[in-house]
Length: 354
Image (cartoon, rainbow, N blue to C red; front, side, top):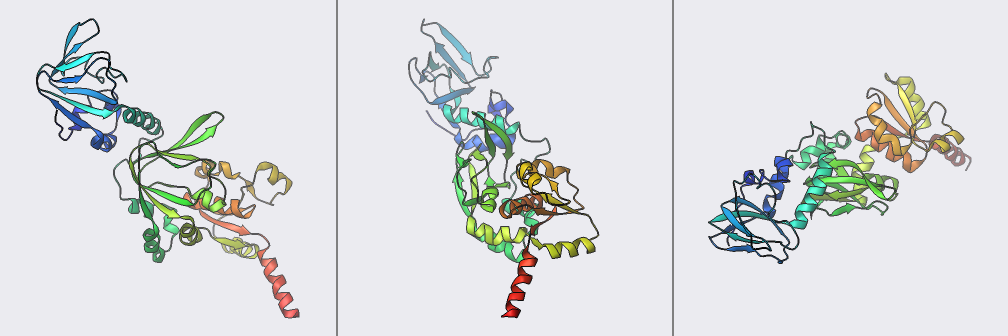
């Protein structure tokens, strides 16, 4: 038995590899073992347990069942499109009838790969770029990172730490505290959220996509689970660095006086957005504000006019996250600091009296 590098084009003739994209085939190439057998060599025997799935790509095998019936099975057989006797415990003997080549992959790895791949692929749009992009270029081309001052870019990238991750690995878990911001450097991931007893798939992520910021900005538990759908590499930025470099660069604040001035001088419309829950909004309505609860904001952001500027009001943490989400979508967004001007004026009066 010997192994060489796999020619992935051969594997495309088999289910489930025929439905994989070129990039996914490249990702699993290193997980394929190429098995070469001389004539008369045993591949596996009946009753033997195996964690491998075998695909016959060249040559032929003699397959013997429990009744000692022998079937000659060649690589060019019309029925050769599945793994051979793909059971945890083999039901037949498989012996090479001539020099033969097979591709082998861990069965559990294959099952996990297909589960995540098919779920993630269903979330991708036709125009999604699946090429291997440089993760830094991908970040810098995003609307969000365009708000980071150029002088801070180098500092930002230096702070990231690289971490290798595996297919099926959970990067963040819904409900847990968050202390890290992540960017996918290589590989793919899927975002899911609990819906009753089931997991609802929300999005598929590829190289250059980032996640984990919501919990850092709002100081709340993770609102979704992110699981790798392939082996890969993620870049990690700690909470302190995220807040000091990225969050402070992106989230801009306005006092009520500054807002009044901006409204008078601006050439475009100002939209007040209250991100609190509807019951909170009705109880303490912000005059002139539009209520878009925080949990609906990402869905609604695509319907907002990009030429306007948006001022998020409500309470501190939720308003900051709301402004971040709007900025992420390329909108001109601010957080309204209610009462700041009045507080400052009151302090000045106290100082003068003293």
